[in-house]
Image (tube, one colour):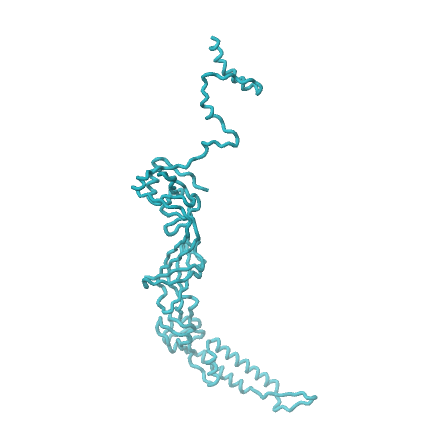
Length: 412
């Protein structure tokens, strides 16, 4: 009877004891109260991490016999030399530094044409055409007359000596007017000679005009460089105006190859990198060159930038507007590498399956870098020596999805 009265009062006594302070005596243990739940509700002390907080890596089990049947292969993560190969198409262009144009600075008519078709090879200094110009003929005649007039104004040299105040006799007294005429004749003659030079009359032709006293009827145009006539606008008998282009001459002993590089590959391209060039026109033959210029303009239509290569063309076999295959091999140093087939793109990140041994595979998110030649650079998530599934990993991923195995968060 007493026990039945005391038992209902125990909770009230415990509640009162909790407010009594530290000096109160502990309540007696109650028989029948379970104590198994105490460790679960007890909070961990400060500075102590519970063992349950450590998250274990998820794993999926694939029996060795099943791995053999589905063709699972693994490869070790290793640091290897990384080379990136860029393959693109180039186009042969004329070296702009070896191009020249031929025009005239006077008005006239083409009286004789030495080069009468496009594509002909000419040497430097070879005549291209002769132009008859009434204005040029009149200027030459003025030069000849000025030369004769200047010769008539030449006077004997006066010699004046000062020896103790005694003045030597001179052949003839010279007036101030005659000295001025002689000076004017010299200036006029030089001005006429300079005008002929500006009209591309050579010094040899000017000297011949002075010696013979006969004007040159036509002006001969000469090729400024050795090369091929790539454009010919001159026609026999046509009238030409000052500045009108008559011929384009190109030296094809060296040619340019202009290639397009896509935007995502442009960061790896540098001036001086070696390049291998092949043409379908010459099967089995290769040419070696280097990148000598990267154009500063980017094409918004093709999303490419142009690079330029220079190639010798001694026999003229490489012709402008031919297409070429360009291969640029870039040494990127040593990188942590895995096969490209080992990486699965989930849309949110890249996942690999790490072989943990005894038939267990761990799905792990990684961060990748450069890709080239079937390999991919690993920036985060893997270490040297770990093995990853390189084939049939999509079957492993299917098994993991069925069992609800998900990789841990992407490494930072």
